[in-house]
Image (cartoon, rainbow, N blue to C red; front, side, top):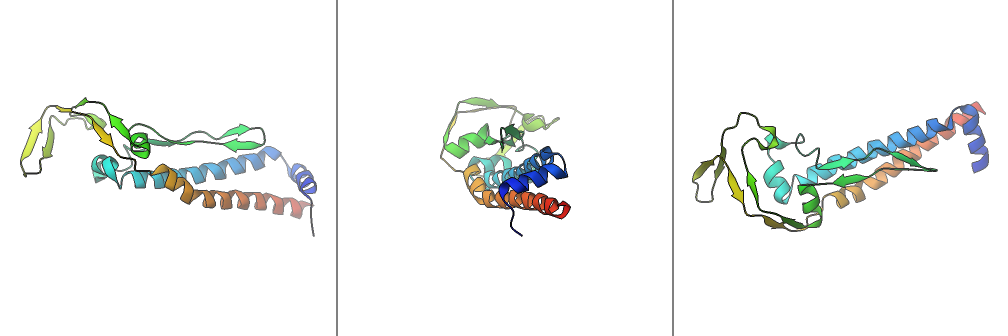
Length: 175
């Protein structure tokens, strides 16, 4: 049996609230965006300064969650949109850029009760300090968000098509 888009729309309206379809598509889009975000975080933590700062077990996802985010899905007429974004160090690493000189103190990343910074220099010497002055740095471009989006878009598209197919199938059964 062949059905035109207009007939499908009529059937979908007949079975219930058309907003249910939009909600299902929005949820599929949100699930896909969160999968892309998870991949982008893993990529960020695997290279460059993201690996140096956030690659250790202590800083797994807890502290990178705020650096790569997903906005709320918004309805724009007959479209649903959301944004996957990078901020802070993740944005600098995505596009390349510089950081200004700044002081690094214990207690960064909410490690309460840590009285001093401890680090090992290339000679093997262990240094402790209450604070250090970072001179700033230039970071090369190491994209992590764009490759994650390019990899995830086909999956998101398939999920949205599956949601739409399920609603069309339901409409056809009711008809």
